[in-house]
Image 1 (cartoon, rainbow, N blue to C red):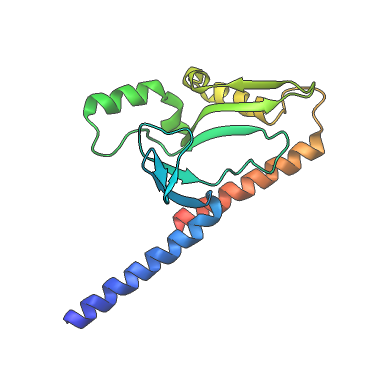
Image 2 (cartoon, helix red, strand yellow):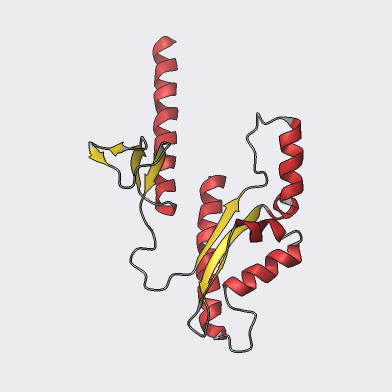
Length: 172
């Protein structure tokens, strides 16, 4: 029975490893952890005061990338968080529990060529579903009469397809 137990544990570990590998198609490439001053023997410039993950820059190849920071999930705290932390976080992002995500911030190139940026203080102001929809419409530039509708429909269809692929990963 000990051999069978090890075999089952090995099989479960392989299944989990394969699932994580499939998840990597949705994430930036991971390069490791920098200790604040050094990474793989190289000095970090500029040095930082804390360790952090080093990830691939997904926008490096784009000339004028529009970026939106969306946090997926229904809660913003760890399962072991205190009740007071849970209450304060739920009050800070009331739409997240209902919608299953929140918009933290975004930056977009406007049709006139200017760049507009909304930081995390903007995300906190999105208190209702209507606020979130309005922010998404601004990001996808669906809120103006000059919107190139077929182009936007194509982009939105691609985004929805990717979100469905991620959802499917979690379901499977």
